[in-house]
Length: 151
Image (cartoon, rainbow, N blue to C red):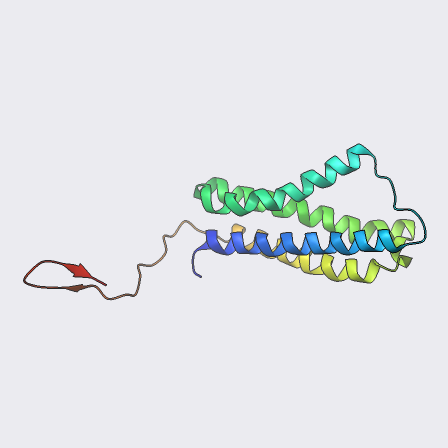
């Protein structure tokens, strides 16, 4: 896998699956808790929907956008998700004492993987140059009499 577009798309799939599974675990924790699940205001639900849409949209964007827009979109999207994820997981619990929540260790585990992955996406996009991939190493054989080419 030498194509940067393919690699970035794969990283976005990986980080999206981590986000989704961490949210599924949180849902199970809410459903199993003796207290009722928190009721989130509509602005919080909209905000989380927008945050989840970023990695979803980046999967096809990595494959369809031209080089300059692709590189910039990956840097911006990766930066936003890295900052938001880092703040919500590592900074906010320390300020409000939420680190005592029993699901916190699982969230830290997933958030660490997600943050590393989005940081790798930023680095891959930042160091990406517009060099075209090398031609295939397959040997082309030409049949002399007919001029038919096969590989």
